[in-house]
Length: 110
Image 1 (cartoon, rainbow, N blue to C red):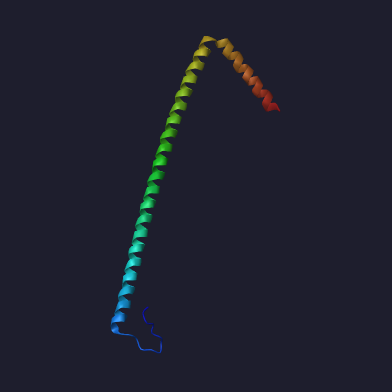
Image 2 (image 1 turned 135 degrees about the vertical axis):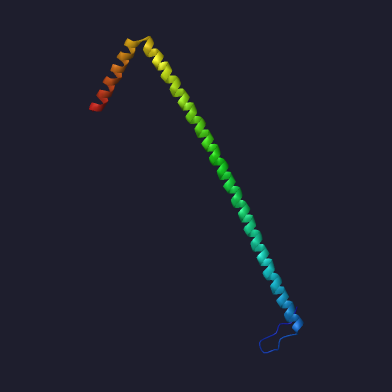
């Protein structure tokens, strides 16, 4: 164990003082390197998370666009089918429209 100087004792040799200063400087350098390493790791993690979020956003956008396109295609198909049925049976279509109107009127009155 190294001898410890008390406030009343004179400082040891200049070699021990320079050793302590060198060790303190090495400790400062080590802490600075550690801080840089932690910052780099944090930056890499942030970049990874940013890329994951960007990919998830792009995937969600693509899926929603596909769903909108499918819904639009289905609506167009239903419109064509309905138009064809109305052209085939116009009296039946008018009767159904009148019945639906009557039901809506009953519901609105209440």
